[in-house]
Length: 192
Ligand code: SF4
Image (cartoon, rainbow, N blue to C red; front, top):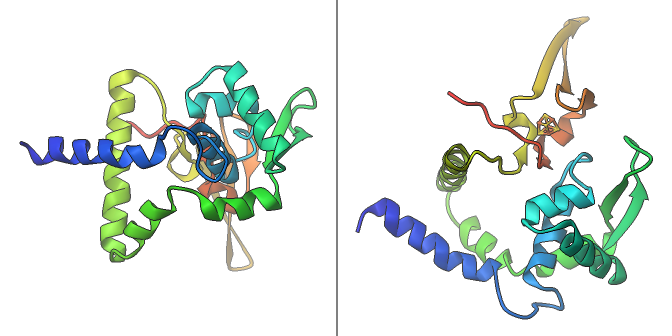
């Protein structure tokens, strides 16, 4: 068996920790996925439609997931600052605390003991596979601003100090530096 095929088969077995029957700590796998995503999503992606796209479900199913997370006190809806007709989904403090019980923690801990180079190599390998799979399926996975073709970076030097400003060319909005590490479902990667 080729190393590439063996790796993907191992990935498939790891996926069983992400996708499971029933509940873990009271949440179904898709509810965990939604809570995990919303805790890391930027302001453009903390919406019901972006959540549906990330989880790979219909707006109706996403709405059930949102209602359940809201009922448990892990999520709250607020009017969007960008568009008053839309809502923004925010993970509450209890929701962030609850994420410490995330079933994927076992995987994170297993990777955590590796040296930094191995962790970076593992992450970059998965990104490469996702980028290539996007090409094949003509779709886009969610990823961070700092890898996105729409992020513009402007550097100016004022009194000897360099100031960096980020702008999203898709949403025509400023992006704070801390936001460049958050997930976005409108992300597009650079193509060679
Ligand atoms: S730069 Fe890309 S990833 Fe960032 S907000 Fe804009 S579309 Fe999303």
